[in-house]
Image 1 (cartoon, one colour):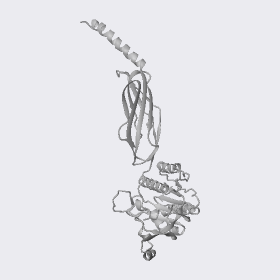
Image 2 (cartoon, rainbow, N blue to C red):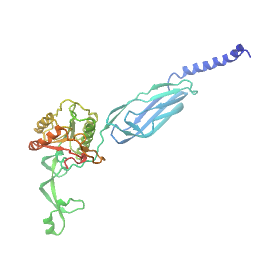
Image 3 (tube, one colour):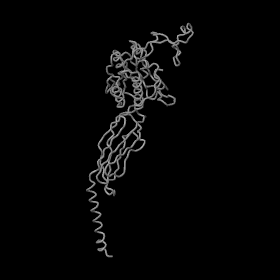
Length: 376
């Protein structure tokens, strides 16, 4: 068969295929209708895991092949990749359930997914973004705290309350029979000997006050900052569990003081946003009669002056120094220390006595102290 005859035989089929391709290209220019929704908690804690449900509803008057990809933001890792694929004609609903692991703290914007679609033959693939952003806040992780002394500044001295606070050892409310779990130090030995029954003292409790945690971002590195925000987050959670009004302050902002979930969320969100800032620290005004805990890597002169000014209004001020590399995070094993703490920390230790007379409690982690045992 000659070449012209071959061309005459092939040309009609080529034109037919080209016509079909052109028709499909025209018919499938518009994507199918897609509505995508996500169900995920508005916020979570770093190191935790939250459930995720993604639903997609598709509509198309023509048979369509599709692929929907919904990647998560960085530091938010799904247990299973979120994607839908298949064919649709008419209406179709899809659902994907999984969970996401929350990594580094911060604010994340989860953009809309991406839709890929094509004709049934898969000749012409197109893609378009789907509308719908999701915000996800990752708060700093928390850890259990053993705070025998540092917990006391969370509560003010003054009026008494029987429902919340610390025992006041000089205020005896009454006596009652011993119950399993009562501390041995509360046993009223003289009354027990007289009655022949083990009896414990019931004490009044000091009333609750507010707590402000100030995070010093003017010194230290990323290791200090991450440890400090975790400790601050744990203190906020501890105060909320006690029903205390809480606030978090940095040089950049101070959150409103309150007991509401919104106030707690604002405090945790401020910690999620915290970044190092070499500018001198600036401690805001503290609620009169409230209690202030300052977390710092060095304890500069400017910070000490700010603490003294805050003490004029605050009931208690605690200055906690976390020199980078001189404390143990939860799970870390003791290690040798070959260097001395920074000069600013050593100077702070020398001032501890004078600051205590001014009503400022100084707590410095030395050597291999655990961050869980501040004040212990």
